[in-house]
Image 1 (tube, rainbow, N blue to C red):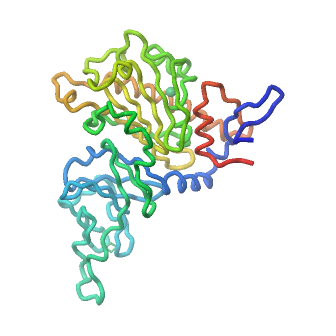
Image 2: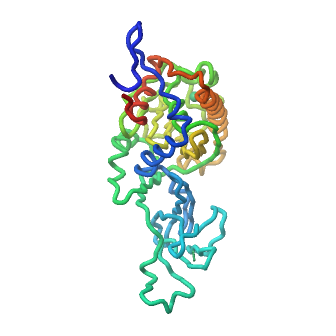
Image 3: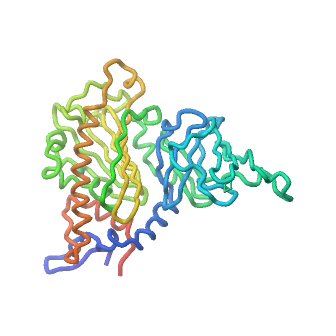
Length: 371
Ligand code: FES
Ligand SMILES: [Fe+2]
């Protein structure tokens, strides 16, 4: 019998998972290892680091990670710990640094933004010590369409294997050339998988998102079966609706390279484990999911626009941002209520509807097989 299918007097029902996968902090550690430490993980847009010497910090599976743009313009990633005695090197994204240099707060070992050790006070006379042996410990880092991905594993398989056919599928959106127009961060008191579950069905749309349901029919979803790399599908726009905005119209040009059909749909894909990619006719929205604990998740939502659109007089992103900010908060609210309910001693796995098929598929992928 496959995972979570239970027989009852009316035939097999596909059921929601056991609560422990959402409420157990020990299980959280296991899945952080499996899904975040041993896989490619999305960490941000290359345009967050436009210039040599720019850097960002991320936390993946409890590890502090430094991502830099070097003097050669290349983006690299390193464990954010000093190779002298292990001290965290850069405390926060607001830590001032000299141009393309990071100085350890403890004994002032200094590293450049390519990770080389370039200064180690008091080490000159130490037998056997060579600066070139003590650079920052690098992490594999690859970029697709301006999205930066990291893999903490040594010698990981190429990112391309995990992107599967997404690059082909989305080739009509000029994502690499698009830039962040707006960013909103959220702290949600819910397990990270509840965020992906919520994103993967629109059964809740009529009750939770009445405004969304006016723009896009909640029953219009056409999903592909989920696979080990992603789950998703598309929904159509109602007649007379140009995009997902507060008014349903847009004064931004539609992306000219899209097909007529692509201009009439919105594409929603969860790239596993942590990038939700929502492609609209005139913009792209991303959610970066950063699990903090079993019941707390940081979510960074960004809206990307074509550079030419952003440069045009009268450009504004407010209609798209306000619409999705409202929708996001509605989603986070029901996700938080679900997290609370899952902690109840009365919770038992419930039956999935036929419109929650992706959730069941995702359970098979994300959760361990049960006997
Ligand atoms: S621990 Fe960083 S310089 Fe000593
Ligand atoms: Fe929703």
